Length: 187
Image 1 (cartoon, helix red, strand yellow):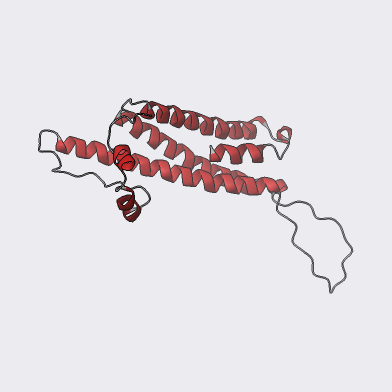
Image 2 (cartoon, helix red, strand yellow; image 1 turned 90 degrees about the vertical axis):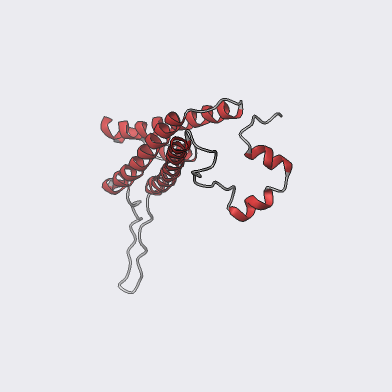
């Protein structure tokens, strides 16, 4: 949702009629990609909160595809920003400066700032999806290794809420223990 907010805000600062259909298609591809993965994540969160167990393969494929798409968008949006020289800087006002006056650099066009912010936020989201895919792959591999053996012979990556120290402090509360169990939470 954060990436889509950046994209829509930056999308509205310029008139898209100056672009040809290929450049417009790239921006619509960004928007559709952000929207699809936002909706998929929202529905998947609702599915988990209602007590349904997600399939590991679906989690791995969704997180891997989102990671690839978001990192690709990060790279292409910076490529897009660098090749649009007419939007790189705002045109300065013409002044008659003497030889001793300092000339200020022209301000950067707001669209460049939006593309840069979109690139950074998209890279951060892609990295988070990659981390999620890595954790799901680890869970799948340890589940395969634990099949037919005693419980706990192979331990998956330990997961903590805001780090080990805060997790141990939160673990003193009963509601947090219920939250960490794989049981459905009754509201």
